[in-house]
Amino acid sequence: MSEDILRIVEEYIVSLLGSKEGSCPTIWHLQKELFIFVKMNPKAKELFNFVKHYEGPYSQIVQDSLKEPMYYEDAFETKQNGEICLTDEGKKIFVDLRNKYAHDEKFIRLLHSFKLIRDIYDKLTKEELLFLIYVTYPEYVELSSIYDRLVKDKEKRMQLSESLLKKGLITADRYKELIMLVAE
Amino acid sequence: MLADSTFYLCFLDDIEQPEVLKRLLDSFTFLMTPIVYNEVSKSRNFKHIKLNPKIVLVRKENLGEALRPFFSRKEIEKGETEVIELAYQFYADNDPKVFIMDEEGPRFFVFRNLPYLARLMIGTVGFLGKCYYKYAILGKSEASTIVLVISKSKFRVSAEVISEVLSKIENR
Image (cartoon, rainbow over all chains, first blue to last red):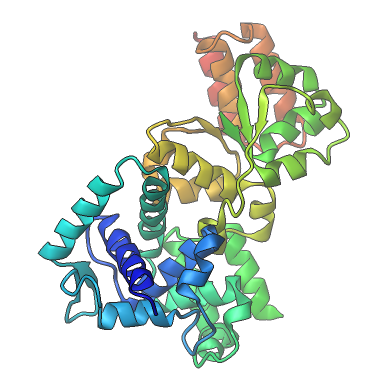
């Protein structure tokens, strides 16, 4: 893996974490939020190479960059409760990136996309997140170790759909759609 | 200005008064997203606005993708996710645009999850009211008549909204 690619992926992670105040709830959120970003921007597909995995779409390079960053070693940390956030060093790196690319329309759009994604996806629990990803992108179901428990299990699926509706995270129409899938 | 397909189809199909839509297009430029264009172009009355220069097609791939998991297929086909995401992009670029959206579910989603966009969101009937008392595009009786015609058409809008907008028109 070239150093350039690793640096770019780490910069994406710093930018995602810096795009909004507060921590990203879990490593699953960070993975899936970048997956959604790739869905919005297919040109980034090759960089992240999301594959089917036992807990939804998964990018090895994102995982490696989080666990053992090569370029920005002290930029982000995982707290004891699993939340991921920028360190003070990471916040400085984020400000540097933002200043460096202040006139780069693509970078500004990227930050906006990250903020939109985090405004919504950070509100999901891990189970709600994986549930919605599986029902929306069924091509990632294969190899899953939790699809049966989250989606095929009628009771669990009803529970997750109701929880999402109560939180205002899905529309009533989407709720009906999910419930109808249960009945299929 | 942005709008979902429901807005255009209200004038083209539900009340079959494309001339009202053309009047609105004389005053505003409407950015039309790909799915909305696809839906609206199925109308037999689309010919009335097809070549209107005030409709600008937004050519952006994968618009609405971030919101797809949260909306039904029907809502996505009406262009709701595209319009909300595009409205968000303009807002984030400090170029906020009013967007017209009537479906209750998507509107509630915006209020709940993207509250900073809510002040830019308006329904078709509310917008028509403003076309009289704010933008002076329609006359008083004209605006009231169109709202009443809409209330009797198959366009879905609550009696409360109709009454509220009629009252605003009447009192300005």
